[in-house]
Length: 130
Image 1 (tube, rainbow, N blue to C red):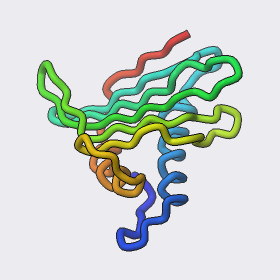
Image 2: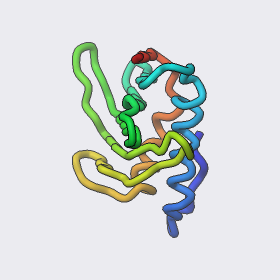
Image 3: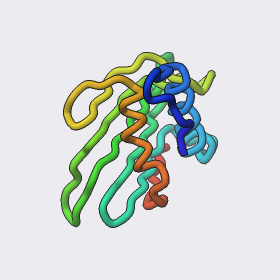
Image 4: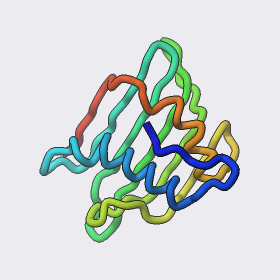
């Protein structure tokens, strides 16, 4: 569950903190030493959530990608997507690269509002890279 945000006066700092907590809980804490990247998938019969932490590149931050949407047997349709730099030393975000909701750029609180419907999906798959 994400931290509740005030819908009238959304606080970007609180929104960012809620998203950082989700990444730490779902990707960083389960990442074993020596692993460079991870993709964790959550899904039910209709919806999916994909959290990806890219490989560490020397001297650079990692990239985090969050994507959620609906799926059928053979196809996914993304509803929301976010790409952001991740500072591995401080466990916090760097610059936001992209935030999309239904193909349109949106602000972070609106993205988090839509993401709320997907964060409780059960774990479906984990892929680790060396």
